[in-house]
Amino acid sequence: MGRKTPLYEFHKSKSHLGEFAGYDMPIWYDGISKEALNVRTNVGIFDTSHMGRVIISGSDAGEFLDYIMTNEISNLEIYQARYSLMCNENGGIKDDVIVTRIEKNSFLIVWNAINREKNINWIEKEIMGFEAEVEDISDESFMIAIQGPKSEGCLQQICKEDLSLVKRFRGLRTKIMEADCIITRTGYTGEDGFEIISRDVEKALKIWNSLISLGAEPSGLGARDVLRIEAGFPLYGNELNEEINPFEARLDFAVKMNKPIFIGKEALEKSKPIRIRVGIKMLDRSVPRSGYKVYFKGDLVGTITSGTYSPILNSSIAMAYVPINIKGEVEVEIRDKMIKGIITDFPFYDLRKYGWRRERN
Image (cartoon, rainbow, N blue to C red; front, side, top):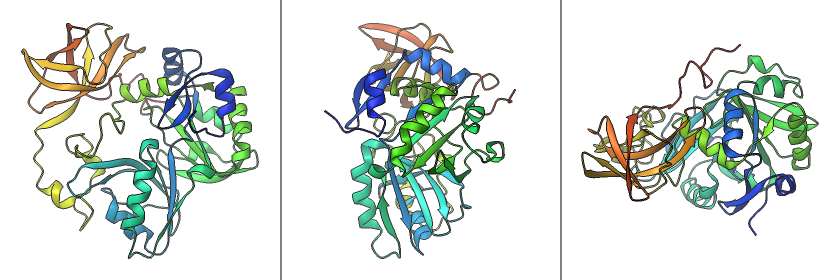
């Protein structure tokens, strides 16, 4: 038996459970493709309480986060969020995170479930010498992601604040069903949506059930994986690890090399990547899985890091690391057969039809 989130009993009775990062989590409810398609066209909710949540506070909190993060953090406005990376001294990615400033000298970090213990141990070591402290609130809070083009209208029915005023990667503090919540307009599906974090754990199920009653469809980790691959978003342990640097992962936008200092900067200044993360759209429905080999003109050039079937594209898609000069058609070895695919940019979908950038109806 794995660890359980505050919504475990609901998942146990309604979903197909599986283990992820030591937690018993819902993999699917009514079907992975159905749930993924619903988020692209309507609204779905995910239990993301397994993810790590820590608060860094103190007079040096901003300075400390600038030191351990590749992005600029100290210039965030209150309730502004930003995607960032944490690197080791060699420039390898320790984790990718979202940081939200919740008070003048207080920041909330959300990081990957599989790195919870590793990150805390590392931060507790690095924070020495700074007037700042770290508080891990992962086990005494819950986190729900509501995602999809109709997420605002759904959440608005139980939120008194005007959500239409909340821009992407901005947030607010409010009460939902008497629970004190921080809401940010963020998510990892490519769609518009919000993430709700609260320490009022006893209110988690009430909020969850209310959103379902208002039209949100419970969605599992299977759909979440499809959605983030369609959007071209990397997952730690698949596309990201401590041997891969931000430039190889095509996360340059989250690295501010003009900062005077941050962990890994010196190594990144000397970095000359020879491989890069790419998308591959398969020419049939054969699904490439992690570890499958990628060939270009008969030569082995890389391996698949993530693969899935995309219901909106009606084809299989994948991500892989290949040499920078590889373009055009490749082949993936799937069950002893060579299946053709095309190197594709991210996201895989048409931005006019899907994703948060499309015009709202």
